[in-house]
Length: 184
Ligand code: ZN
Image (tube, rainbow, N blue to C red):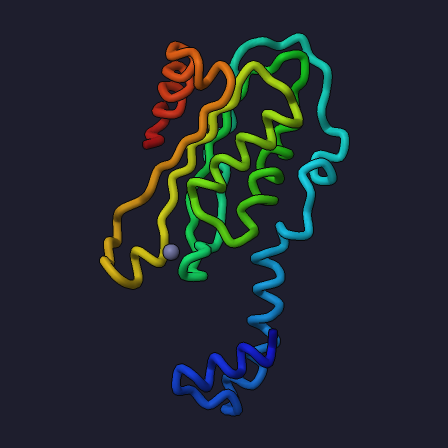
């Protein structure tokens, strides 16, 4: 990867041997390994047994999980907030694990739509809840820094599974709870 970064620097008209850039290939390589570490992670390992039996059947919501991902079309970051809701069916999961699960999928090359679906699908599989809803609002540097240069637009995607998909009242409750506290 370091050799490729050196070539990239040359291609954009830089001198990869100048002082400020000498160590850049090494740093970029390390940064990319971090930014894409999700490829080496599995949801099951991340959960690591933190699923608990609980007789809870009302909605659990965790809002404002920070996410940082890389758009697969431009290799530029997109970042924002992820909101996850689910209705347990005998099993609940540690709150911090929801953020870790989101990260497993965010730390890969992504489309926001697919990221949203993958998080929802993983929770459906691991918890077998009545339903899951995931909403992500994110800003894309590929939109902000290039092309249309829409600085303030953000993209909202949602994935609704189980009762969140089939029951309007459940979906409405979820979305209304997200709107509190100034969440868009
Ligand atoms: Zn893009």
